Image 1 (cartoon, helix red, strand yellow):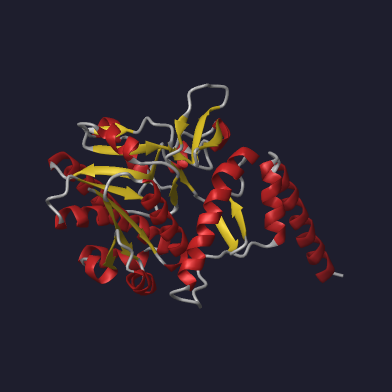
Image 2 (cartoon, rainbow, N blue to C red):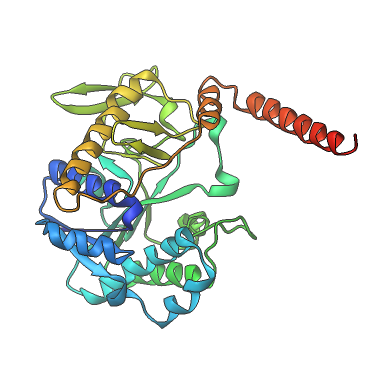
Length: 340
């Protein structure tokens, strides 16, 4: 039995539900998905749905004095990052019989069985996943080498020791800006391979494909499953999960995928379009329980959409420069009018 865990609020509800459905469709092992509901609406709606493999934890059940103390000084994203490591800790403390806990970001989507990734852990105690940045998008300095997206902690002395270190670090400092080598909960992972023993860095390329590395691969569909390979290479591997960071639902019929990152037609058809259809199924499903539910959409002005499209052709810096020049000229022109 796998015990996956995640957290999300009403604005990520469609994505969290879609992630769960993708797990249910692909995971060959029995599992539960433990969801930390970051608001009452999320908890109440999931409770009404009564999904067979979903176990709910409310904020009231989860929050302790340490978390309540830091909550007021952090925004929604920062508090969610703070909660992630503490939620894994909460579950393992509450369930000493578990072998491990597997953390998932709510905006992941599984195209194949995650068992191949989990089995790679072997006799190690923790698993972390690299960003594997495409060179032009390398953000290692700011965002870190590793991504808090798919992590495993065994419920043993060493796994709990590292997890406790991480959660306490996040309680102490977890903000959305770079400070002294820290950024959110993520930069803390940079030196784990040397700081701690028993840490495994995921090797399977099908785990952790994302907007910042998808340019390195080609994808194809076979027997209703998606596979990929490094461009120019012949070795195929199953695409296990894709991280839909920066994926915007604009309406039930329109999406914008990862603005600012190059995305090939091949990736759009095999990955993004499949995800969007799954999101649309989730939207229909949710409407049967809450017809007025209307969260998770993002309005993006037309000028920003044009800017994003320019970025896909490698013109983002040029477009930004031109945009700044135009804005500055308008500002100067308006100032000159005041003095006429």
